[in-house]
Image (cartoon, helix red, strand yellow):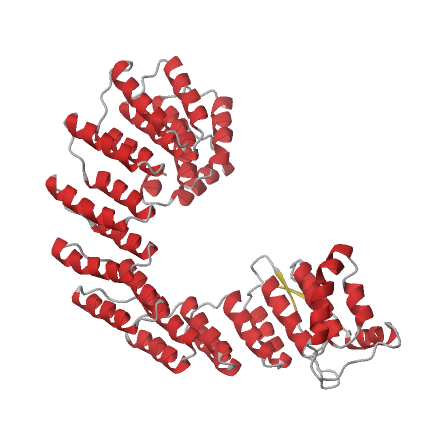
Length: 511
């Protein structure tokens, strides 16, 4: 479990603990301590008390490692009062706190927004506990002040650090640089490099990343690029995240020269683009409506030996939908499936939306059926897209049929769903049916004005008269609703309806 935590796999460590309990083993105090550390990393602080109670029920003799883990958990959660409570319990148990214990508490006061108390605690280390602060103690205190945007006080800690014989390290300056960057003072963060050089320190990749992101935050993309050139002099290699961020920044500014300059710089640093790089550029061309260029970039990605991910395919599909080319969007989805990539509900819903916008609901339902065949569960967005499509196609009875299908998939309709169905009935002039859907008073009040606006925008299409009240509309509903479902297990815990594709009167589908 400890090895997994060190590798950043805290959830897997937690799974091992749970399997121990399920197989009848009694976890040791070490196992509980490790579990507490894993949950702290995941920031699942609501489980702290439960673990403490379980340890108490087992009557374990608590050691300093467990106490330190509890103190750290409460400190990380910002509950410094509980952290101090267990610190005092630790001392009452005859266990001696270490400098590491105090470092944790200093961090906790900083997280809780009480850096002044961190200083008092640090002073008590020397006076009461006869312990000496170490470099980490000073760095934690610097972070406590920086987290509360009090950079001047952080520098005072640095001066005290030097006076105590400790030399600030890269962590010290990165903490202060980060505070400057978050405060919109990236230039001051960059000036810290001179301070670092005075102490014979060299900025690392993190230092430079902080400064670059600081300039990004201020919208100074050219300054960020200038600093990347400076990274050459500092002999620090920019990572792909920096380059991808700059490309996005220049694309957002519609600065093609800037994009070309970044791509050239990537070649000079021998940094290869990844799927994010290509997707970022694709998205820019797609949003600008240049789908030929977007597809070229997609093809270049494949030629470079980089496998497109679902996001890249989705960008391409969404672009085709925006360009009113749903057939190409569906071709993209097919190509994705044939390549071995796993499509998700987003790209399927995107293609469905394209066919709905094009008024071809038979194609929209065909893609929906394909999604079900691939065991991909439709969500609320999928159903609301279909409901909207049937409304636009003047088939409100089909829009309302979606409610039964939603029930089959355990998708709960929202107010927006009912509003779309009401609009569908209103769109063909059947106000009684619209009012039936809007039977909830609050929903009716909310949507009354919106329905009036729809009336004003009605197209010159055929509108069914409602002069016979709701009788006729219900006959239409009953005739079109020969709906039957059988259920098949999809093998992944959900159950999919079997969809029967039988057209009726050439104007729809029977589900």
